[in-house]
Amino acid sequence: MNKVKKGFPKNFLWGGAIAANQAEGAYLEDGKQMSTADIKARGFFGGIRRDADYYPTHKAIDFYHKYKCDLKLFAEAKFNIFRTSINWTRIYPTGLEEHPNEKGIKYYKEMFGYCHSLGMKVMVTISHYETPLYLVDHYGGWDNRKFIEFYMKFVKTIVDELKDDVDYWLTFNEIGNAAVKPICWDAAGIDPESKNLLQRMYQAAHHQFVASALAVKYIHENAPLSKVGAMIAYKTVYPYTCDPKDVEAAENAKRKEYFFSDVQVRGYYPSYIWKYFEDHHINIEMQIGDEEIIAAYPVDFITFSYYRSRVVRASEEEPSEITTNTLEGLTNPYLPKTAWGWSIDPLGLKLALKDLWDRYQKPLFVSENGLGATDELTADFKVHDSYRIDYMRKHIQAMKEAIEEGVYLFGYTMWGPIDIVSNGTGQMSKRYGIIYVDLDDDGNGTGERYKKDSFEWYKNVISNNGESLK
Ligand code: BG6
Image (cartoon, rainbow, N blue to C red; front, side, top):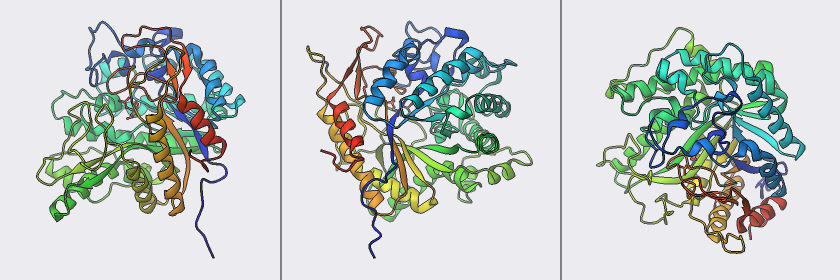
């Protein structure tokens, strides 16, 4: 009997993913107020600045007004799923209002309805790096327990109002980044320069675990047809050498990342984390009932972003922060790199899928993957991005092989199907899209959209359900 699964399953979900703050613009329109993303200036993790001359998210690519044209292009590329986030500050502009902003609800209702009318399912990230700035300014970050309450008010509103328009919910984008400097600002509103940073970051993560479990509970009880997933940032880890010390260092690094999915999927703090907490003087304050809530409401499925792998060595101090634009630790001599220094490692994706499947046996979904590159728009408005096609082909091939090797994978949303503002650098010139947007790093340009060569290629792949990747 041959039980090998050949190719992608029949109902495989193919599409693209964006975040509201990186695409919508209209940052103060229709009642919206500032989020944590809106004070990030340009440059590596922008710096949290109140006095910059330019903030890329304020205008972004104006998806807020242009979504119909953009979604039509996604439908033309045969997407059957679209992932985006709901910008919290469109629904609760400061986070403290008693009643939600009707205009914000209307916007998402219409946009999601439009997706469905075009044949695309909707996956929503509830919190994707856009916490109301007012809350952070007045209550600190997610290490303040009050954020569970603020978040749940937001969750209840969007679930009550939009449950018929959303197919999949993700509770927090890349939840583990709550404990990584400087992206803890994005993920948890924690100032990366604050004192007792590790303590603050892990306390914030604890509150997000509780909030995530409460969101799962609420969605299951009130929108029983939709599923709720985790979203983690996955970077396949390799030991620098076969020296057992390096292998152990790599295992420790893996555990630090798995901690977040372990809690969300298994429903409890893994025993290994207590030693890490002890060694780093981290003392998590839990309230009675927290552990029960986390245990009772694990996620239904796991999604993850995958861009690159990394190398770990015992003699190097494990980096506790992202220190350069490359996000890389040690260089892997076997792998090419992008212009932004990220390793290109399709096999790392296959390993990620196999590892996650073996560890959890929960349905998997690749919710972000792609190549950030500089593109050139030719005089006849073409973009010949064979490098992007090559990147995507190899990563999709890796998923196909993982499926053959027994992994249960049900969907793939490439990152930034239309060029958007980079989260890490605020650049427009770091482009991921199969659709080019004519805007530069200063926001100058026509804003016109043009299909790149990768558009036709991805459309063909989706049309034949990944059978041929030519
Ligand atoms: C992920 C984030 O970490 O990586 C996205 O969820 C982000 O918001 C993406 O845009 C790519 O990173 P960057 O820095 O190239 O935009």
